[in-house]
Image 1: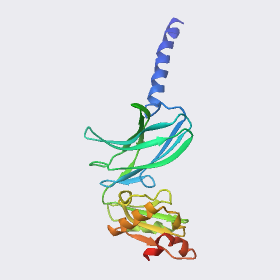
Image 2 (image 1 turned 120 degrees about the horizontal axis):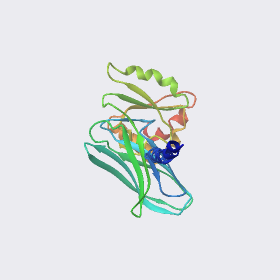
Image 3 (image 1 turned 30 degrees about the vertical axis):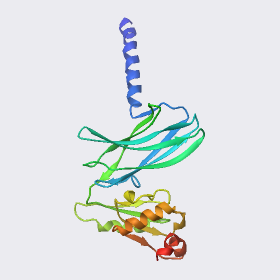
Image 4 (image 1 turned 180 degrees about the horizontal axis):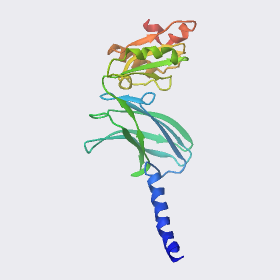
Length: 230
């Protein structure tokens, strides 16, 4: 009996350690603060290209004026990309930070929110970065599976991956589109794009990007954002 009773403190310590380890990837010190993150386009990024990191933030607690950051580490050197953010009480915002992964393909990034010198949120997010020679093909369509044959353009040793996008996830800066080899828009209402998204796509095309707009019964809506340029 004595041996059993002496083991209780050890078990308690192990339980505490496991609890600490389970929460090590995410820290949230602000009551009423919820942050969700999407890294890349449809979960993918590409080495030597900009990486869009989309934050969806809801704040039901006190107002916050702080700074969001995306952190990457390479060869013991930390790189951070930051953006100021104001979150009034009872508010919801979507914010994108464009980060450039240094050197090799990262397997994870760190994101966080700092306000008044205090770390309010911290989290490690896995990322799926492909090699510079792989092809990423963006598709915004009601039936994206119809475009699966595009992935047949992959060559030996190089992948071609179809990325399913929409009016929310198409980047509003050219840097975020740079990882794409082509972008197809089919059977959707392209007028839902913001002016910044449209300008980003046009600049991306001017820099060599390929935009494919398909026809069909809804071709007028599909081409709505580009009528001035057709």
